[in-house]
Length: 455
Image (cartoon, rainbow, N blue to C red; front, side, top):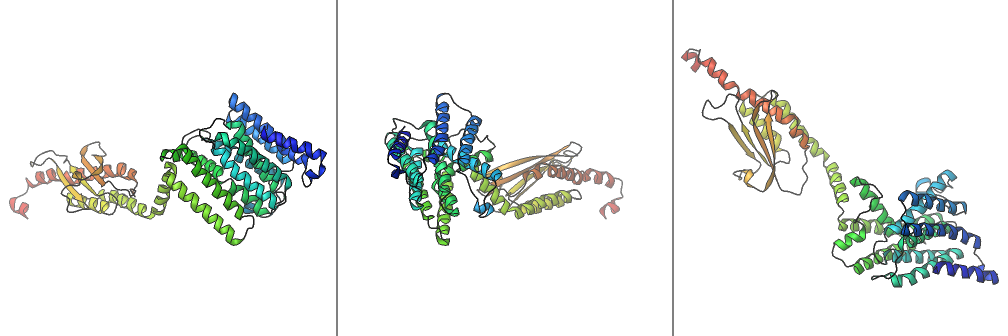
């Protein structure tokens, strides 16, 4: 209402005093205002009845197409296509994507009292300054009108709030700001037209990007609601409602200030802005402790350490092949020690059950090995263990192998599937073969003369 009444008064007064409309085009104003009203009505319906995501996107795409027809569009994308005018079949989807993304970005951060309105206020002030510098009087009029409406609203929207934006307010603000960016792109230099809106919308764009990435990584639907937004994370860290909003106001102010540096783009200013923005985002995401990005970091670390993983995996595969030709128990033990000495396990206990039972008074053979000689038994140390039942190809039980690893932060650089697939069976077959030799030798020696037996 505040925005509409102010714009209506200006139109009425400028019709009486045409000099007030110098450098502005009321028709262009209406090309922004009419689709913005459509977005506002969508928000009202969503607040009262609830609208699905696809309904929202369709209406927002229609409103964005109205801007495109009205001449407000993305003229070029220098980072992707260079300074070339885009054909309409590229220009139209790019314009719709920009409008829909920014519109929903401000809706997404509307999770705490005063947060979306305050962030939008900083962006609106940036657009007002940019419009004055570029002598875009219509952009200056719309941005200062929107800033005044937001500022008056924010007085009662700050915690504890008595009035709220709702989807009608957040969608309207986001759409109007996206339209202002498109309108300003007609007069600003190419780089400024692209970079300043993106940087000034830093907080909502960052929030939207993080939400999409998190949900994609975790396999959840993109439109699923959760409580892992930036403001939720800050609340979980112990900050109060007001403290979170003030911190995010500061973040929005930094983005706004950095975007103004791009009004006079040079190599040094561009490098400084990109460095500050990139470093700030990286540090912020680290402190927010998102589980999804921690998992990405772990996968990246494993990729860097892939060579060691290859080495460890090959040691297990090599042990499988060597166990197939082992001829005695000592050789089996040597193969196991060689396989585990170079990987990330710290020790093992082998309990072998001979196939012929207890004939010599020793029904089983045990062997313990550890990387740490001073340990009497690694099983007595804080560790986790993997128990492998040794079952032969003929389905005979030949004991067990317990593999130990101490509790450490470093990743296990070994494919555990190798240990639980071919390896236990190869070891069981080897034990069945080398330990089953004993009764055969005894039987043969009973038929040999004593001298030959001694020899």
